[in-house]
Length: 406
Image (cartoon, rainbow, N blue to C red; front, side, top):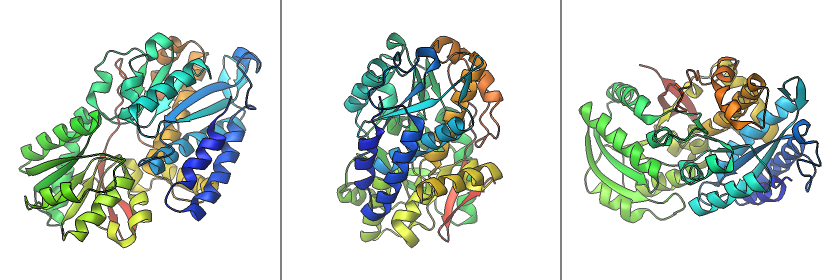
């Protein structure tokens, strides 16, 4: 059973530009169709272990994080299409197609729980991916009992401290990367004569709290000062009160901690209130998306980034393929979704099963070693589900995203 057809169409058409996303929706539907079996087809009807491998996605397709969630889903679908076009996933010598089944969580925890339960029980997905802590943490409450592998892009340290045997992250853990990232950030700031007084907009999620705690500690240990902090909702649209409170502390930079849509709104509103300083955004927002929304106003924004910012050959190849499929620039999270799907396929091959999730989890380290090209230099999966995922400083200059390694 496939659901993306109607839900992705609605989510895309509800984003920035109906004209722009109308064309994308058509392509997204084509990709969804290429990745799936006819609606209403069950696992038993489609051949059981020889039928399609159901990959569930719990991601926002509407609401304040729609652009982010759709960008992630599109990256996953592009990888699935390439895998299927190449003959499918090798499962113990049997080629099986990868079917992506998507559920819109609207960037809300209760919706994420409903999506996870439906994908696992009704759609029989043995693996569910999500691009947010907001969805990952509540699904960790039942994924082991329900019997599905949870793959998430949560940067929160707590994601791998829960002891969940069926949870894997495919992005960085801020406990491991925040110190080196902030060290690079300070180097970059000195080169650009950016001050060290930072005010923080903390998104009201578990990740927001943990990311800000790690950032504040690293920032202060490098000689910076945190002048103030305000909480905000990624689904919100009016942040004038929070920004006004922070501006009263006279910051040099404002730190943003969530996806691009609300981040762009904060930047616009802060400029309207007279802020002349710099913005720093967590990895939840991609510079390309900010440029698309803010145009010249995005110049100078600093980003928590990865190898994505350096235009390496594998990244460029993916970006070109994504543009051809969706007629728009990919976001960093698009590449992460793409890479996570390729890693999953290699892990299924190594495990020789897509149905025994414990065996699949046990083969993911081997699957990661075989990932080529490895767009983000991911390596060394731990028993707790962490990967070495190096992070760098990205920045927007002249409408393009560039990288800084120090």
